[in-house]
Image 1 (cartoon, rainbow, N blue to C red):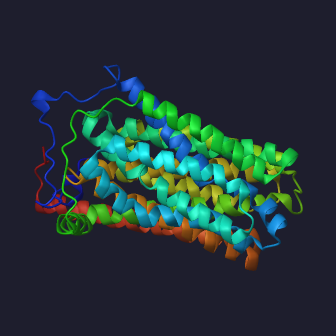
Image 2: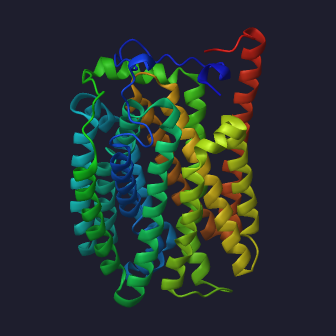
Length: 429
């Protein structure tokens, strides 16, 4: 399904002046071609380091609560502050990437983030820990939008969904491995040692990323003038399709952030009473997200963009309902479905943003990432508050409302496409 078929314009304003390469002389990377494997591995590692650092405290929240003597709603700020910092700074960082290059900004962001990651274990109080995490999230803001813009410029359109899916798969592997490792390390040596280990792993990923990522060949520097940036942002926000995709990303992440912030508290309590190491291993279900994200391209090919989003939302809702059962196998199956639905929906929505915005791609991706991580912060905070007041059922209720929002917005897109088809029955080429 092309952007034109949704009835939404793909024009993002004359202020953003990076033209798309012509297909006749397309020298961008393609699967099996020169540099594609190095690029895929480099961005997979960058995505892995980003999620491992961003959510390094999420599986450890019960231990952090005990160490500092704070409630779940307070400890959850160590996650919400990091994602909130990223959401606030992703747009300014994307502007820097338009001027100084995607690879330069990604490298600098990772360098600062891993340095802060090595300081996090020494936080003397919950307040200092939250501040360090907020700074870490702000530093990581240079990664997501710049990575998607790099892919949109350097990879052929046919391979774009798959390439972004691999980057998102790196997110899932980072999120999974970070939580599994921290769970077992924390059980033996405490949460501080656990986050220190994640910091060291992230350093290795950052170094490998810089060595592997091919130099950009299609990047054209843009302007840092506020008027140019503001015009580009306004143009993106005026696009109905992009607005819907931003909202969908935020709502999907609201579900995911709430579930995985609170799940540790649920599984440490009755009737499960699981030890920290076992709870960390629960995050192995992220492997399902790796698969669903990396196959998003095929899913869109079969069902179309909206069909894939309906499937992602329905799968997520089914998982939420299953997780209400007082049976550990059913809770795990629910987490599997939530994870599969979320990562598929996220990969589809984020790749659609990159394909829709033919100009000012870094800003288009930045707006998506900002909405996405606002959703994560909201999910972490509201999900923890709902758990405090209504238990796991409260958190599930928040998630179901967010999924209802995803389905409703996708229905609006379906209606807009039908109206556009009646107005212009000739397919766009």
